[in-house]
Amino acid sequence: MIDIAKLYDYKASFGFFSRQLMYPEKLDFHPAFLEESFAPDHPAREAAQTYWARMHELSLDEIREQYTETFDFQKDCALYMTYFKFEDAKERGQMLLRLKVLYEMFGLEMPEGELPDYLPLMCEFLYAAEWMKERKAPENFRLLFAIFEDGTYHLLQALEKLDSPYRHLVQGLRLTLKACIEQETVNP
Image 1 (cartoon, rainbow, N blue to C red):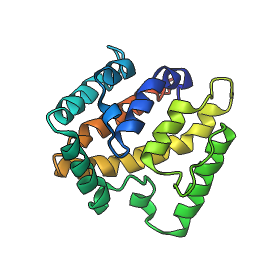
Image 2: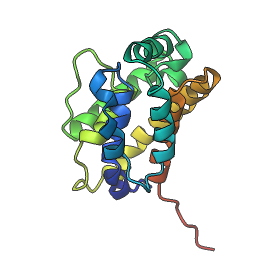
Image 3: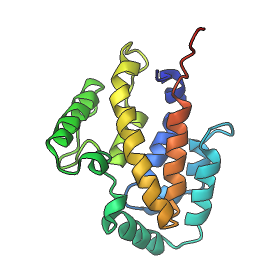
Image 4: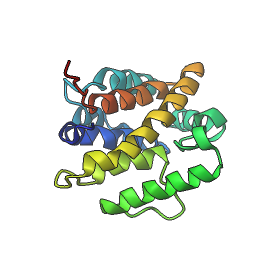
């Protein structure tokens, strides 16, 4: 089961993940952005700090070049989370439709020309959506979490092979999501 209260506590970090996974802009690297996004006890703080330190060794032009080389030219590093599992199969279309409906249920309008499994958009949804008063949110978010889990697993493997600084960012995202999953206790 998904702990929506904990997920809500981590909203700021999802905004950080979303911005860092989009094409880099100067404001995305403002010194306060990292500190405002991760509390000292956040499960992804260390991974985010490692990512941040590696990115700050580069100029903005170098960051942009690395982003383009990684996410635009490496097939294994696609930011579309259902692509790894389904590529262009019929099932992918059904998953995309289900994701779009989920976003709309929580008031998010899809940007024109963007697919709902685009990782920065998925993170932006968790950052912007209001779900605390929706009693079925944990149930509804199961699909979202499954897509995150599947897609980021494959993405992380590819980023590790490239020794990309983005691997720390994706690892942090995975740690954050994992911290929001309640462990079910089994009675003997």
